[in-house]
Length: 329
Length: 180
Image 1 (cartoon, rainbow over the protein chains, first blue to last red):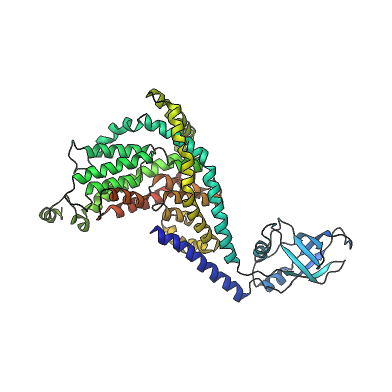
Image 2: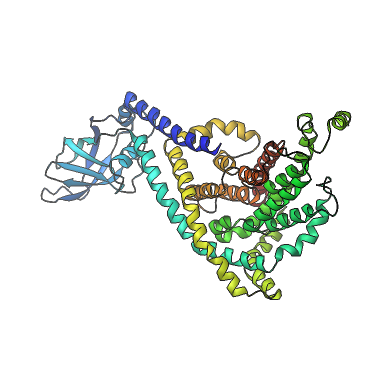
């Protein structure tokens, strides 16, 4: 199942990106190769010698909207820098410019490192300013590029995060080890055990299965996942000795699984502790309340589903004649 | 409700100290060589961090691509009306889907939400609560039944999924109640 979801995420990303990019090309969203008319002025005056000079750029809203076929509006004025190069003059918008779409996308696609929208002034530049034609680099396959970039970036983030967790993980794993060696599990086994009897009515009173289940749950409560699993497996083996079939789950087994998947926890998983840091202080109550309520639901659904005819028919704890006569009750 | 919030707010200052001081104290009381036990356990920290890297990479890059392609927005918008019926924010939907399948992967989802909305956001709180209050259902079922060769699992999967599903809804509801 995970395989399909994971592959589905990746494949649908590609399909989505492709559809959206082809849509951009057919609609010509970015007007590649066509210059945008803007009005430019020089608040500090125009100096022919200077390589860089401050400029103010005004984009006419109506012109902009009809040019790009959009309803977004540009700000009234943008601060920019005019840079003289050998090929001509280049206009660079300031980094913090609040650009409307599609200009923001053009900026991200053509100059992602500096975060400045830059365009070539192809016509109309005079020392007095006025209307100039501004050509941006062509933008194609924005989403295609974006998904590749995302894949690379997130792969890097994943490792940074994982390594940054080492310290806190070590702290909590150390503490849990102390708790484990101190036998904290056994401190509450006696508490848990009497509660289990009604959940597992099929288990005889002096059977070791109940003890293993209690240990498994106690380990879960303290977040000792590594200790809980062996106890759980041992409990399953004990339950299997009570099973009249080889390959069919008994009601007790299903109940053990349900209680385990609801995961009663006073101490949250170490990974979560490490990720959330101090915030866990507040979240712990939300977690305890949720986990307790979902435990009740897990128990109820294990009990109630077990009464459904389709599951009752396969119950190894009942022989055929018995199940037929009690199905109505 | 407000008083409950305040009481919990006060109590919350003692949770981490209780774990960080309480466990060694209990260990001392039980005559455990606490320092050695701590170091022994802490050694695992590096291994765990390294062990989760492949899972984090796998989930984070796939989710990242999905988001970058615009598919996430599309899905969120498409499902929002349905999810709104049960008061479930579509932002935390990835957690609800991934949680029963992979634990380390769910950590990836929490990381993704923190990146996107910031540590304090209610979506991060919801996702973290889901993470803390449910289990990797399919993994548990596979391991436990695998250990004793049970092939017909009967109502184990439906019961586990019902529990998970309700835990997700309850988590949203409880977080709204406590922090909303």
